[in-house]
Amino acid sequence: MPHGSLSLPARLCLLAWDSAETDVTGADRLPPLVRAGALVELARRGLLVDEEGVATPADLDSETGDPVLDGLLELVRESRPHRWRTWVTLRARITLDAVREQLAAGGQLRAEKRRVLGVFPTVEYALERVAVVDALREEARAVLLGPVPVAEVSERDAALAVLAGAAGVLADGGQHRGRLEELTERCGAAAPVLRTAVREVWTARAAASAAN
Image (spheres, one colour):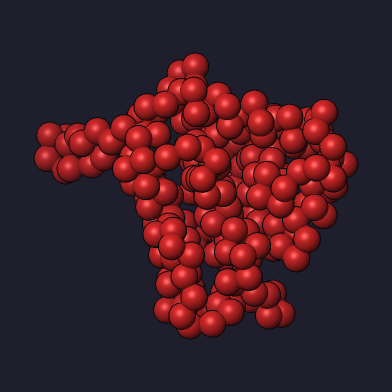
């Protein structure tokens, strides 16, 4: 699967990998980051809409064809109403696990089955295609830091750079707030959702830093 066809949450998951170390950077903040990407993607496609701050399915039947996004859409439909900020962290590991399985199936990650304490089965993931991550990182940094003009950035690439910047997986987004705001505005109708998601990603990042 070429990286151009990857969804926003899948791209965010890959960007969190340090290609030099083939390991995840900031693994503890990865679930909310990937979930935020999925929420923004669904909002961008008009499948989740905002109703007084509550993430609400636009209808009961639409699907994206992407199992990760459709899984989250089904979860929202089957759950009681929650605000966007709640969904960024609520059961976020479900979305992360689905994304990693998808990336392993596509060959970007390698799934390695292990047993904890020799008894409990678990799956660990390793980066399989370093070149894909390097290309993604180069493109995203050009959007976040320039020189790509904001007017030439797609909505998806803008959202990717904003969320990755907030999570600190590309660069410290706090040093580029003006650029982040311009990129957020570039996301059009999904911009309010993106702003909420970014605040929660910042919060998760701060909590992870405090815990470490």
